Image (cartoon, rainbow, N blue to C red; front, side, top):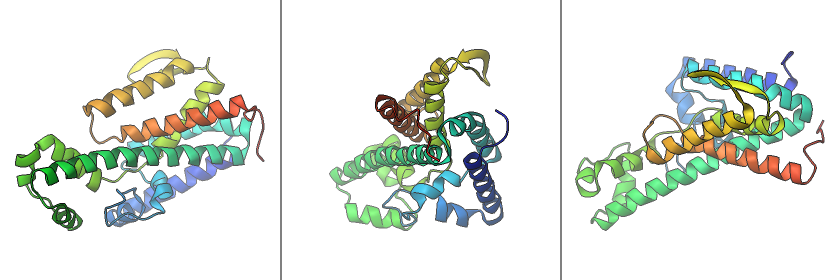
Length: 244
């Protein structure tokens, strides 16, 4: 991989600065810069971008920044700084859009279930805006529905993972025969198999809900937008051009 490329270096620095600031200022940073559900009072338009620089733990930022360095560096060398940054932020925004779309579905499903059970929808939104909820909702529509409903509204998304998944897809397109290894499966796997395997895992956990605390659909969104961009660039012969 060699020397850091310009865009990757600056992305690493910004992410590290945000992480240090989060350790110093904690909750306030999460309120301002995480990606909240649009109907949540904490939502701000800039969070669509700023959430990409927020991370929840040291291991979270460590894995993301290592992946950015390992897979982003060769792509930036090939594409040039501007094309790499366009791809990176496009994948990250795509991840935010799919994540928010899934949350909208879960939130609307839960709200509609409560309304159908006789609860006033405006009162539900007022209670949520005050940072509370009614335990009686679980008796009306079930604990799982309420859990998904509250999670969609109250749990913000953080991390560069969506953009990183786009980078992984681009790497698999470009260096399909490169051999990679999963930490829990130390066997060399070609990139063209490794990356789809990761995405299939996110699809499984996302649809089954068996692994919480991870924005699986943000990963899928980043991978999907990365795939669409790579497919379009390859089809239109843009993939061989550098943007300086």
